[in-house]
Image (cartoon, rainbow, N blue to C red; front, side):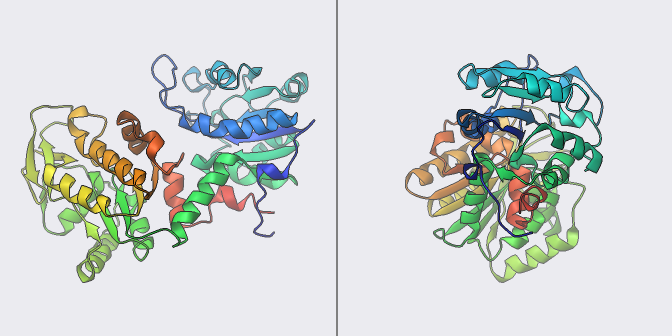
Length: 401
C-alpha cells in the first residue's frame, strides 16, 4: 500500500457502474421535507461527472440510527424525487433493500446515465459492526468504488472501511477531495495569523484532544456553549445546574488549564444568559459564569463575552468554528451564536480564511444569511474534528492504493 489516493478525475466512467458511498443523512421535518440539503448539493458534482461520462450509479448511504431494524421512518425512499429534481430530472430509481438476490438484476435493468438508490445501510447491523461478509456483498454492485461521504469517514463501518478493500479501482469524489484540501490548508501553517479557533456545543469529550492538538497552531481559542462549564467548575466557579458532558477527562482539563496559565490562548465566557428551565424561556437574566445561582443553568454567552469574542474575531486572519455558543435551537438563547456567525462573515469578506463545521454552526450561518460568505463549509462536524486531530481516518486510509 502507498499513500496515493485517486480522485474522481482519474477515471472515465463510460459504460461503468459506480458504487457511490454518500452521506445523505440529512435533517428532515415530519413530512419528510429536507430542511438542510448541504450534503446532497455538495455531492451533485460527483454524480454529474459519473453521469456525463456515461456511467450508471448505485448510491449507498445511511440515514438516522435504526440500529439494524427496518423502519419506514428511516427509509431513503424520500430521496428519489428530490435527487432527480436536483439533477434536472435524470431518472432516479429506488430499491427496498441494500443486499439481496434481486439487486444485481435491478442494477442491470437501469441504463447508463441513470441512478439506483439502495435502502438504508443501517437497516443491517453488520454495517456498523464493520462486517466483512456484508461488505463483500455490497462490492458486487459496482466496477468502481467512489467515496464521497466525508461525514462518516471517521467511522469503522463496513461500507467505509472494509468495502473499498475489495476494489482495484477506487477513488474519492469532489466533496471528499475538497474536505481534505481545505482542512489540510488549515493545518499546513500556510494560512495567515492570527489563527482563532472557536469551539462550542455540549460534548467536551470530542473537543479536549483537539484543543491540545491545535494549541501550538492557534493564537486564540474561544470556548462557549456547554463545553465551557467543566473548565469553569475546575477553576472554582459555581455553575448551578448547567449541563456537563458526562464523558469528561478531568486530567486533560487540568493540564489545559495549567498550560493556559503559562501562556493565555483560551478565552472562556465571563458572563452567560441563565434560566431555571431548559425551554425557550423569556424569564432569563445575565450572570457571571463563575457564580450561577443554584437551580439556574447557563444557556447562552452573555453580552460582555460576545463583545470580547467578536473583538478577537475582528483581528483574526484564519478562523475555525465548530459548535454553537448556547442552546441555539431556542431563539431566546441563540443570540451569541448568531452574532459570532455575523462577525465571521464580516471578517471573511475582508479576506480572512474561515472554515466551519457542525450542524448548529451551519444553521446559524443560514439563519443570518452568511452561508455564501464563508471560505469553506465542512459537511461533517465530527469527521472534521477527528481529521484535525488525526489525519488517519478509516475512510481515508481505506482509499489508499
